[in-house]
Length: 211
Picture 1 (cartoon, helix red, strand yellow):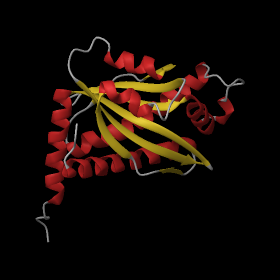
Picture 2 (cartoon, helix red, strand yellow; picture 1 turned 180 degrees about the vertical axis):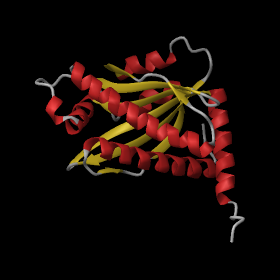
Picture 3 (spheres, one colour; picture 1 turned 45 degrees about the vertical axis):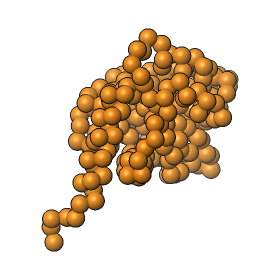
């Protein structure tokens, strides 16, 4: 799907605002300043998501997934490669670092909480600025290969679905961790979201009625 220039600019601005809130939340969680690169955003049919992410992830990946519902509904995912997931959990909770290089239960709980904070921070900004009410399910952590993730997002879904892919890099304590925030939307929700974004962009460009 090709976005109009206005939609792309407005969506990028919304994501910048959402990611700024996300960085603040992560800073509060870790006690360290967090810098996020300017996010890149693109929209793809769900069947093309694998090829989009393949250059970033290989082998096992960690995803925190959270269903959201409202006028716009779908599945939000924080996607990290395995090494990045381990590093992020250790930066947030160094005292709980696992003895091995595998994600154990305590580490998984830390990652799930991080995902919960990041996804809620970003999606709440979308909801507030677009003036829609969004409800969130309990987040869940999945460890699987990329092919398995794509299959789980496609299985049993009859409607055409799209993935809005937002890529950024976290910088914290001399470390850089790259990750994706992905929103999987049905075509009706995507059309509604783009309609709301158009309305928000039009409102944002109107001159103020106050002198």
